Image (tube, helix red, strand yellow):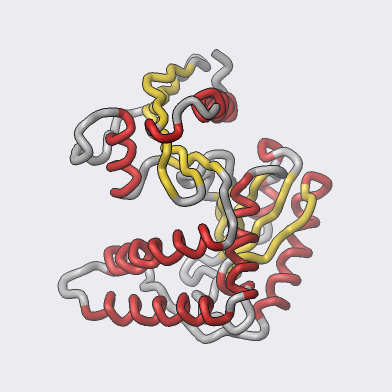
Length: 267
């Protein structure tokens, strides 16, 4: 794993996006509705990792032509922790592109577009974001006895509070489900489930643990088990007390069932 690299804005980034978007549009065919340039490389003047982030919006996430994308040099990462996403990256030693494919109507699309547009409209906030990036890179270099992966985690985790703040300012209010992977997600998972918040990760074969996120706050959880015979068991589902009786329980159950269906479970 390579250390996160942040570089000054490159005016060629929009052109690189357009060139790649044309290839991806052809590869995805009629399933592709549009492709958005997102992430820091989409914000003029903003320092960024030199990786083009893109969101192809498709009609049916289950009909994404992975083989056609792999022929372009992309490597599939599956959902990679985010339900209903298809993640691909390009570049084996040096990443050049990240592709997050979402189905039309998924709130994750608005989350990225609103964040991008907020930074474009607020250059002072964009500079604040860039300054934090440089600061965290320098801090990570000075941390003793850490691997590059640990340095990268330090960088990503310490960006998160500012990203959450700006996401709220952008007006995003969507709901999404992600696998509980980060420490904060696990603490909230256990808090909402009613178990010891210090329990940490729960790992067992074919068991999956998700949290429901509203904007940037964890407000729900569910635990589901998948079986090879096409059956899924929903073991636990809970909503934070402050968000109960607002329809979130029904919505989360439907999302859990939809996710199980996408994994091939019919029962």
